[in-house]
Image 1 (spheres, rainbow, N blue to C red):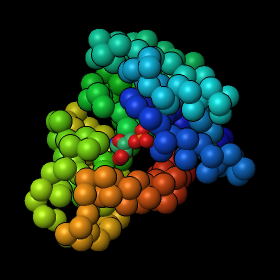
Image 2: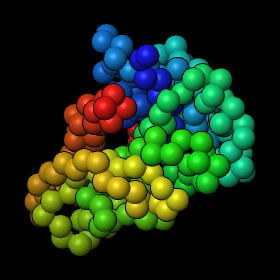
Image 3: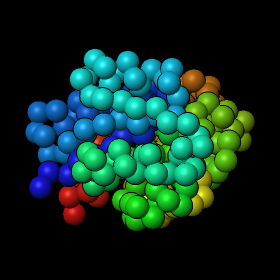
Image 4: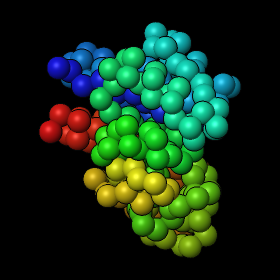
Length: 189
Ligand code: GRF
């Protein structure tokens, strides 16, 4: 059976769109639904254009889990991919999808991870620290932010002229290049 993936996103959703587009021809993976915690997230507009149903749930519903789990099961979801999702995944959903939830973090974990380290906060910290490299980490999700087993990392070189904005762009390019195939390697193994 073709693996069915639910994409979770809290914001723009460029990674979600990139992943969906990547598999749109081969259909090696299917993406029946997109789930968010923000009703005004631009990912809903991307979903609309892509013809994919998207849903919004509250932080309380994510904590409790039942409504989301019912939606996932109604769509025969096999895996959950966090593509810019900012809430911690709580026990009910973790237990419903053991070792079947992966996340992408825009830095080289374990550095620059954890609560509050997302989006531009990460790149600002990397630049402030004078790092000569940054990158991406794709990892399994557990009960703590950014602490699950690492699946894949890719690096980009930084110069003293880099700003949080230029670092973000370099990191986004790595995400778009590596996230789709890394997801495929995990869900089809
Ligand atoms: C990405 O940088 C990803 O690494 C992080 O959140 C950002 C999401 O960007 N988890 P987008 O919503 O996919 O454009």
